[in-house]
Amino acid sequence: MSTRFHFKQASELLHAILTGKLPADNQMERYFRAHPDMGVRDRGFVAETVYGCLRQKRVLEHIAGGLPNPSDLVAAYLLIQGASARVLEDAGYQGDARALSERKRTLDKTALSFGEQTNLPDWLAEKLRAQLGDAETLLLADALNRPAPVDLRVNSVKAERAQVQAQLATEGFQTEPTPYSPAGLRRDDRAPLFRTKCFKDGLFEVQDEGSQLLSFLLEPKRHEMVVDFCAGAGGKTLHLGALMANAGTVYALDVSARRLEKLKPRLRRAGLNNVRMTTISHERDARIQRLRGKIDRVLVDAPCSGTGTLRRNPDIKWRELGLVELTEAQQRILVAAAELLKPGGRLVYATCSLLREENDDIVAAFLTAHPEFNIIPANEILARRHVPLTMEDAALRLYPHRHRTDGFYAMVLERKS
Image (tube, rainbow, N blue to C red; front, side, top):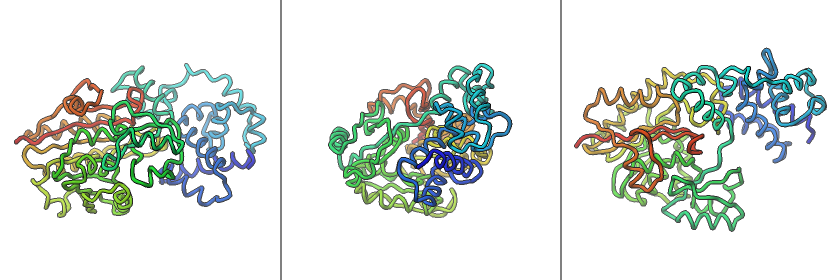
């Protein structure tokens, strides 16, 4: 397939993502389905180019000048990747390739604004700067603007980590143990892992190492009653069920029946039968109220801005996040989830957000209104679970530039006996 075709397709897809409401991966899937003539390599080139543009959009806009259209961004990205003005012209770029190439050549990075240096929208760059300072924010942004590794979680109901690592190697896929999660394996590049016998036999799921640590913080035990309050497609539900050795009950709650439906084949593959799925209409649904005061442990992986997942979802940066609505929902969900606990029960409040408003501020407001809860320092649990991580305060805080995980926050709360 010609470079001209690649350039056109990448520009079209980038335009669709930036102007549409679908997440980038969903939009990409829809686009490729509509273009069945694209081969595997063509799709790979276009996807890599589009994700590169989403990650480096601020710098690309600076190079392109003015109000660039998606084809200008694609052209600027290809120049950064080593293409020449002649290649852009041959690819069908309609702009002034020579002038664009000269702007790229003479780019003065010291003249860039802080938002442009970080390739983040100004509001997000400034929030992180206020929390972390300039130097740390630049390191964080650099990590956020690189592709994430592929992390796997071994299904302990069926196998041990070393066994799965060896079996994947025999199928041609080398992995390394993750440094923190005792259930994790990692690859630095994408591969067709879903086609492996190992996956089809239910020996692993794809799950970021940081996400795996949330379930370890909850420490669910056999025969307990556990709630995954915002279960989604059930990645953490599966882990909780496995940590309970397929005994007891995990209630997977979510407002989306479509998301929960995706959990069914995953449960069958994992060999778990201790999970009950319930679609709820809101956090005060009558089906939840029946569990009040009966639950041993609750995981609240709250709906959030997703700013900790920008390595995987760079399009999030360029969308309206609605922080006020999100934080109001987080407060309501945390209060409703806490009511389910027995005395002595444990709750983990977690987000994949980097922002204080969605993390520390939510927990602080909750504790002020609910003195019947204590904080359990994350370090106590991490040490008990043999996770070689030490936090600076009571919360779990994970960052891509420090830990090579997605950005996560978690606080462990316990209802007083």
